[in-house]
Picture 1 (cartoon, rainbow, N blue to C red):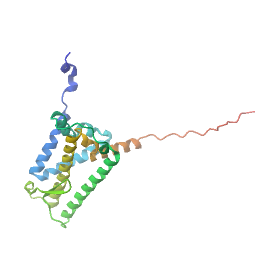
Picture 2: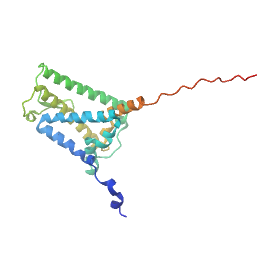
Picture 3: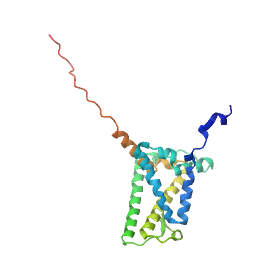
Picture 4: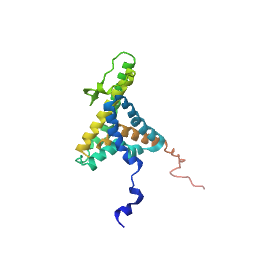
Length: 218
C-alpha cells in the first residue's frame, strides 16, 4: 500500500488548514481602506473567548492564521533559516515583559482614540510602524466617518502591521513560528488556561491527625 492510500482521510485538508489567507488579505484591505482594520478585533477577542470557554490554546495550535502564514512562508517557501528560537525569546520574563509592553501600546492607542472622540486632538491619518516611525496613510481613508472611528482603525492597523513585521523578521532569522514563543495573545491564552486549571483543582482533604505513639489499652 503506497503512502497516499495509507494516509487516508486524515491527510485531507481541513477547513481551518487554509486560514493563512486571512493575514495577507487583512493587511491588503487595510492598505487600501483603513476602516477594514476594525476586522482585526476578531483576532483579538476570539482567542480569549476560546481560552475562557475551556479551549486552552486550541486557537493558537489550530486556527491562528498568522501562525499558519508564517509556517507557509518559512517551510513551504523556504524563507526561514530554521535556527532554534533564542532562549531569551522563550523565557517567561521576556514573554510577560512583551505582553506588558504590547498592552501599554494598545492602551495608548485607545487613549489617542478617546482624545479624538473628545475633540481634544485631531485625526492622524498615519500608521505608526514599530511604534516609532510615522508613515503617511491618508490614501486609505476614502470614506467620511466619525474621526474617532478612523483614529482607532489607524492605531489598530499600526499594531497589527508592526506585530506581523516582527513575526516575519523572527521567522526569517529563526524557526518559522518563533513569533508564537512570545506572541501576546498566546501569552494571555496561556495565562487564562493556567488560571482555569488552578481554579478547577479539587480541594485537598485534610486527614485527621494521628498520634505518633498511640496508647495501648491495659
